Length: 420
Image (cartoon, rainbow, N blue to C red; front, side):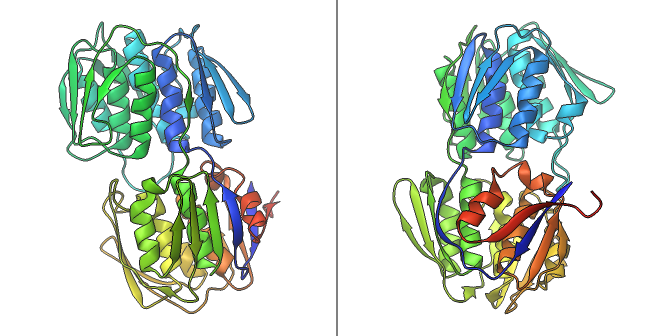
């Protein structure tokens, strides 16, 4: 077990290179199962979740090789369509192998998923969509067992937008007989990136990035290469870290168009922002302005960044009201921010944040990836030393976070926890 030791009070300044998006990389890795052969994926982030997915693919029978930020996946010998509990239980996105396995092999045995504990996030919408394609679904000792001699196209209307549900059904439908229409589909850039990769494999997909996706099934898909899109959540994390420390930070190799709602909110908080095609420069104000927030599906403000915005406005002038329509229970960071001196009240799944002049260092604990990132950002602005424990959560979503922050002037280091 490791922790971050952070000495706060330094203004971040400089340029930081953004890594590939974990939430785009994971479903694309799963999609390689749809075709027999070798795929090459560039700009892959070096993260624990990527390693977990690689190990799942190996159990299924794939050969997976990493060379720096390139991943080569050979699925020619895959013959064991099983994703075990030991790995799937640690990462929710690994459930995305269900659709590709069923689409290629006509059978799959996939453990129910785990991952971050941020309220109820059932996979019943995935299963409902897969059933609509004609699969037989049974439950066996915590595993979803799916079988189908040949999937059939269907019209699927999600009652609530689901990113991984949209991705799972889209992948399964690529080899289904006939046409599949997904209504109320998720519109995130990661869904669009997956659709682009599937089209390179030969799939017939239209409408990705809109509420309605249409897939015309084909018999066989072929391997393909891809470059993973930049991580919009990591991009915003560094911008918010620069903002909360009253610094000036430029993110390089990013996609500003994926962050319109976030950039608007940062400007509302007082930031000066300059954009190019692949960079975002943020110049923070001396005092952050309060700004209410409603986290919503894309193109709204991302739920993954709600904890970071909560940390940001804890130092604002005035009060802010934070609502999360995607994960209404996603407020595990609030008690830990209070330990740093933030004044936050939770009322009916809504956080009311009264800005304070300063935060003070204290021991805190990460409960999930994004809550951990919020605590790191708050600690960078706090007076004195903060220790952030359980940073294995943070390592799931951020590549070399302490190294990148140190290059911007932060005093942050990794250390063993006291009981090690």
